[in-house]
Length: 346
Image (tube, rainbow, N blue to C red; front, side, top):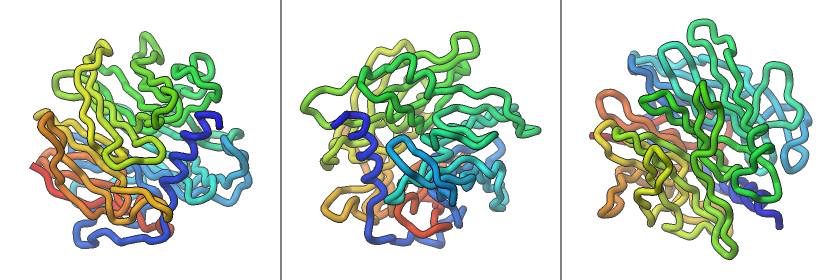
């Protein structure tokens, strides 16, 4: 089997679950979400939520076959006063079957722009729709200022040197010098982007024969400028088979934090504390184990649980008061079931 298709099946397996377990309603700060992914806070305390959506009614051709497309992805916000609303709607969403939803994956907020990461989408997009791209929106007008085509970069460069050329960006981080880093799970790479140099390969992970194909799902920048990369476990998803790698800004590997499971997001705080979201605690005949996800604090000495028993958590963010928030109910649940909950902090 071609390895990129294996990677696709790894991601597809994330959607399989027979049971949906509700998160604690009294902790929810946002509800009614569809496939919530990564989170971000603005300097004024506004919470931004990337929603991959619920696909749609259009018959489309996906990367690996027929799918359903629509414009149900969006960026939602929760104001400092707790008011939930939609910031950008009618964005591309694709349902590839078995609950596999692709759309808006992550975002980054600056004083003048919203940088939005789009994952996989239909091969033929509607006008004004985006997939496998990083799109910069003007913060005041919401007009598109530029589109960084990551699928084109993957096709031209193929950083992991495998046969199939697929780009599925999943996270974004920006350092103090305004260098943008993008984790691309299907390209098996983290890209960097600057206005002067465009897209470059920061790091890539070619497959190693006979080893599980863990893929990069998340990226964060530490207060010292180091780049942290979180990896999803490779099939057959062994417990404690995932990791986080820390790199210097020039791309030299500094440290590896092992013993994690199914990492979908990471966060390095201003104080240098490293957190990770583990999507689930195990995988069996019925798919991933419901209500087994957790948020953990990671140090050189080990892993400490911050919140446990979460149902398919995905993204994490911290507000100015040090409180941690995580998106939950991100896969395999009915429409409008996604939430963001507060899980503690320090």
